[in-house]
Amino acid sequence: MKVSEIMRYEHNLIKVSPATTLEFIIYRYDNVSVDSRLTYVVDETNALLGVVTIFDILRRIVSDEIIEEFKSNGRRREDLSEALRKSVNKNKALSARDIMRTEFFSVRPDDLFVSATKLLIEKAVTAVPVVSAEGVLVGEITRRIILRYLAHTF
Image 1 (cartoon, rainbow, N blue to C red):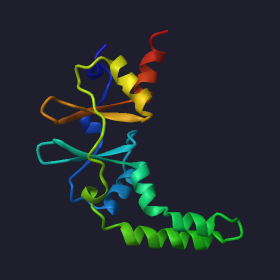
Image 2: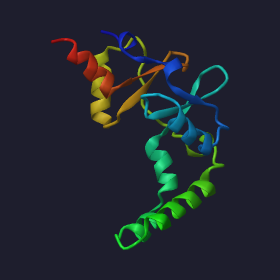
Image 3: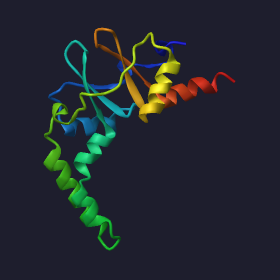
């Protein structure tokens, strides 16, 4: 079975340009029904330039300072909300280019899904982009997609 037979296709993914702001990326996660945990940064030809993970977003917003300041339960919830709001406002203008990962693992549509499974396991990632030989984003393969496929093999 090839990756292309079970992958999630690119029109079901969050794709943004390099100039897209972090504020907009966060908005997309709140207001778009998608299963993907990745934001794909593409150019005008849909060539994959980078990947923004939810981890990358959280690392920018929930800083070590906020964690240290609020890890005791004696702080008020309102204070934490205010600190997070300030952090979002401080970082919201960052672009996808500023926070994207340019080194990432990927597979091709014609790769066997077992090869993609091995990559997901070895690299301990939840998803990898599926790109054509020309570097164009065509979809993604995830652990969940593979598990759903396996569930239907019984």
